[in-house]
Image (cartoon, rainbow, N blue to C red; front, side, top):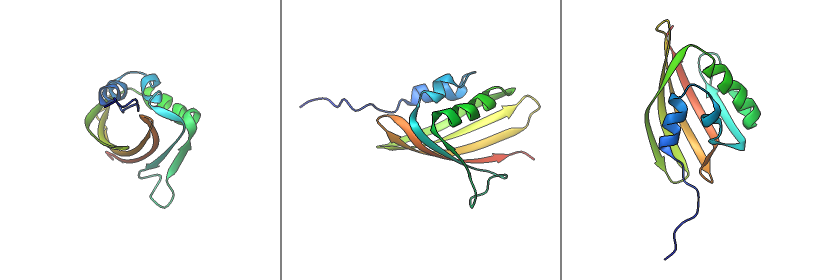
Amino acid sequence: MGTSTTPSFDTDTLRRAVEGNTPDTLLSLYTDDAEIRVVNRNAQPSSPKVLHGRDEIGDMLTDVYSRDMTHKLEGCVVQGDNAAYSESCEYADGVRVMSESMITLRDGKISRQIIIEAWDE
């Protein structure tokens, strides 16, 4: 029997990326043609914010990681070519954000992601 050479999704790398101080490692987990759909108070389900490709995703991550806030990966489950994870964030002023992500993987990288966010108001 041979061993599989298909790249797998590394949840330890995801944790380091999410909880890190720069967007670089997190951006490296996406395919070049990845798509993210964000649903929150300002981008509701009928009209989500949609990002296409690593350039647009990189711009969003650069913005997020330039803010004075912390990020924590609360949990991650991987099953085949799908994964889901929870992330909690807190701004320096105490405002909290929770997000849930459902992702589709291709060759061990994120090719599609749906993010649902809730913010303190």
